[in-house]
Image (tube, rainbow, N blue to C red; front, top):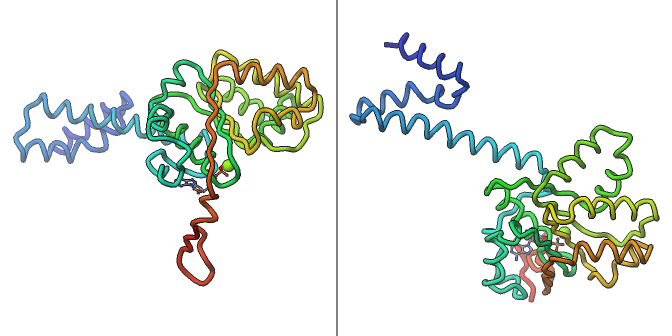
Length: 255
Ligand code: ADP
Ligand code: MG
């Protein structure tokens, strides 16, 4: 009997059904003790292989996207963020805007949940099979500037260009030089009409000229980002400040 099972396992492995191979001995036992039909047994075996493949794919994609922290939409507390209605939150979570290639601009002061919301939407998109890339604005500029020089930057940008959703976190207010602004424009232009972008920033589009410098490039970038976009203003007190942990113990909830 053992030999038969081992043979079966080797055959499954040969066809790279490695997850099925792992559980086949236990599953045979369960099937025998619970009197399963052949059909049920095969269904369970192949179903397990499929499920594990999907889980591994998800793990791979999450690792690849390298979010700075892992947060989900379920963990986003709407009671803490009154400026987003339940209906709006639901619409964002359903990701139709991603199919329609809309961009999302998340604005608000530090600590109100912009990055959390962006990551949550990113995780949701990955779960639904979309390709997602996440990069901070600072890293993005560095990566664009070193594309010709390092393989790492080339790979990163290739992934960004191929993604269905590109999250650019924290548009900082560190003035770009003309070369940087130009590189940024070209990337936005490459993504235009093919990928959705989520941009987070603590300053609104009217202040972006200050960052980008050149007015013509600013207009060209804004045009492409704003053409099909939704601006979400997140307000309120910083979640971090409200839920600060005190050195003297416990969580201090200040209001
Ligand atoms: P921002 O990007 O706007 O500066 P973050 O998204 O980094 O803010 O949020 C700061 C911290 O507060 C994170 O740990 C985040 O998970 C948490 N946070 C912010 N808003 C919420 C919310 N509405 N529900 C749950 N956690 C939140
Ligand atoms: Mg942030």
